[in-house]
Image 1 (cartoon, rainbow, N blue to C red):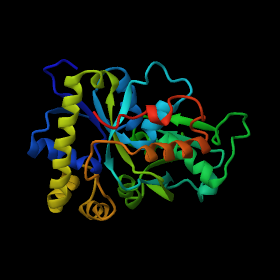
Image 2 (cartoon, rainbow, N blue to C red):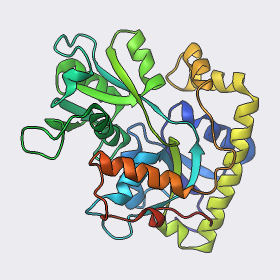
Image 3 (tube, helix red, strand yellow):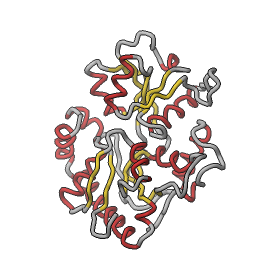
Image 4 (cartoon, rainbow, N blue to C red):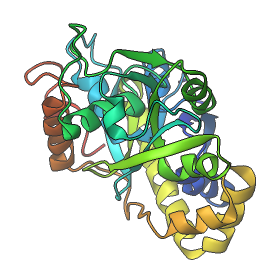
Length: 302
């Protein structure tokens, strides 16, 4: 990031991004907003490649990325802020015409569709397996699934469970709901994250300079204004979500009843990081004692 350049901010173009849109539209957020429809795993790759400076994504993906056993260098980013306080509801989906898959039990040892290795769709499928009591597959791998098929984005995931490339995938409930309603995919169940669902990360290169940290602090101030505006202008939020994004007005209004954004985006709660790590250790996503320790994953004050 050159000194004169605005921050390059990665985000997932879903309903949760609405306060970011308001922050730029009404409060002068000086940022280049770069959409990542494939999700948090792709943003981790781009942060490490120096292609973006900031990203807003899934808590479990950020922590899994920094806690991995083969972490290289400093990991490329740190968690610096919180965005959504409520947990995320992950829908478990298969193809509408998959007669071979009748329930969650049918998925044990099956083919998992994911956007990328280390993404929320990958991490939460292992949390699901742990909750269901599924052990590693009989094929001798360390996974409870026969395969994890990387499919990049939501559209490819939907196609894969219909044509048999994958047996199931996991994606946010309201983003999936339109495709349950139109009969393209079928819902098998839901699972909630046992932690606040969205956090903000910054590239370590940005955090290494006083100017970079100042830009991040300004971003937090503008996001706080965007969230406050969002809370006070729900009809405008619904209009934006149901026209600029892939949701019906009815689903947008139902989602608003379930979500609570952070009152103050700057800062990270250490217990959130530790709780997430404990769940990921238990699920076999991370190995205790490997990768960064919880206290090394975040910067609490810029």
